[in-house]
Image (tube, rainbow, N blue to C red; front, side, top):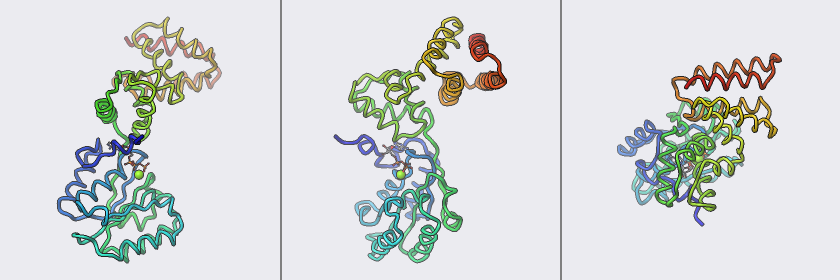
Length: 313
Ligand SMILES: Nc1ncnc2c1ncn2[C@@H]1O[C@H](COP(=O)(O)OP(=O)(O)OP(=O)(O)O)[C@@H](O)[C@H]1O
Ligand SMILES: [Mg+2]
């Protein structure tokens, strides 16, 4: 069975979701065939490696495989191994191109020493090679490497990006994903498409119909779906019913601190509460949190919070 993260890996710039400015920049470079050394930095699963490979395909066409090499810095950690590979790759002439491209994946996991060695390699081979470094933390890359590179900062996928990706896969795999399930998928994946695509694949093995409950269950976050429901009910103005829902959550053993954090996360990362009133809700949440720490009765404070949510309707 093919892995969906490979099946749905974008093959061209037009298939890359989000990262608009970066894609524009890379497209322009590919067109002019003028590639800079670059650091592709950002969280996991946002398209760093994908962009590097697409760039190579666009620049080199048929010969991309001969002119492009991907070295995983954390696998090939031994410096001599990396050096050997770079040397061997850089030694042979590029095919139909003035240069080749070397991608160092996870360069930020290399030691300072190894990075210094990379810097020397860059100097030695920069006539015939362009160096790309992917990194989750740009700050873990030594300054001399940073200063030799253009820096592309990738962002987590936005909500509409996540939905675009879900719709693309759902259409092709004939999945039915309702809108609550999409919210939950967005919440669980936090803008990381690798997590999202993997989760969709494992859910599709169980059923072609995907709902919020199964999403949250399979991500090990059962109480989150109930919390979300309780919030929605409160926001619809039904104080009594929301109190019932949260009572049963609390009775199931969730402590108040966890619950408040979970509510904070839900509100931060979903549209359950609209942007206009988000700040008020956060303020209220902070107030309740503080009062509980100061010794007020947690459930009374929490009820006051629910009453506040219900009054927003
Ligand atoms: N912008 C995107 N548009 C569409 N699919 C994407 C995008 N980013 C990632 N994906 C999907 O997620 C998978 C992993 O992406 P990729 O390998 O590019 O992540 P990465 O940013 O290099 O992450 P890491 O830091 O973990 O190496 C891809 O195969 C693809 O299926
Ligand atoms: Mg990568």
